[in-house]
Amino acid sequence: MQEFLVRTSHKPRPLPSGRWAMTQRWNDLLYAHWPVETAEVAARLPEGLDADTFEGTAWLGIAPFWMDRIKLRAVSSLSATMPGLLSFPVLNLRTYVRDRYTGTPGIYFFSLDAGSLLAVTVARVFYQVPCNWAEMRLEQRAEREFSFYSRRRLSGQPAIFKARYRGLGPTRNLAENRAGTLEHFLTERYSLFSRNRAGQAVRANLHPVPWPLEDAEAEIEENGLAEAIGIRLPRREPVLHYSRRLALYIWHQESVRPLLAVRPATVAVSPSV
Image 1 (cartoon, helix red, strand yellow):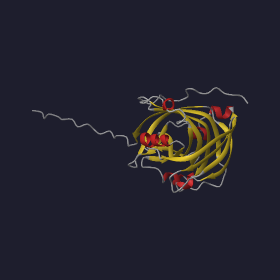
Image 2 (cartoon, rainbow, N blue to C red; image 1 turned 30 degrees about the vertical axis):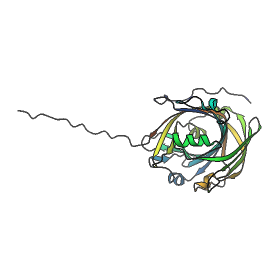
Image 3 (cartoon, rainbow, N blue to C red; image 1 turned 120 degrees about the vertical axis):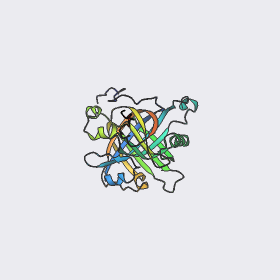
Image 4 (cartoon, rainbow, N blue to C red; image 1 turned 90 degrees about the vertical axis):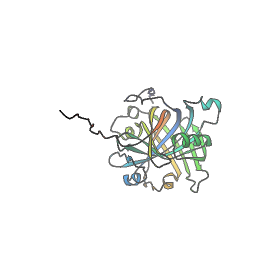
């Protein structure tokens, strides 16, 4: 199969203002997506966020992968100071949203499970993501084939996920990732939304540098993530994609809030004599 050059800079708009706060790399990702009722997603979002839809439906996604090359701008590379500690499996449950006040599209994490307790702490403290410590195993079976197991620790709901997946190689159709396609809707996202401790919506700007998407195959044996938040997935096969790499630059969080209304200026006028 023909290989394609990795895009090192594809962002169709200027980078966010200010300096990025964190970088990380995601590796060997499976994206499994199901269409779900928009009302089910909307009911679980904080004020200020609306469910984003493609062809009239919201989408719920599950992404297993492994993470490395984590760096906080204010700290030297954590992977250099603690080798081996920050290369670990991760599993997230996501949907796609828009900022109600600006229309900005982004990703909203319902949950993020990680095999590193330190990573869970960083995610909770710096980005207020609902992150859980989990028992995880990721085994590589071939160049693009993996088995993945996750069971949430210290939780009344273990939220087990067990799957085997494989990437099928890049194709020109997916590499081009045209606007108007489902792939473009799912991946061209430059904001990460979450809920802070006060229950308010917050946003961190992103700059992703991905490898091209590939078609994928997967056998998902067990999947309790959606049920853990009260959503039942439809009885249909998910839409599947695979990506070899995804580098992320992440900016500091900011509040999602209404745009300031323009108010008429009050001008003092001296009475005429």
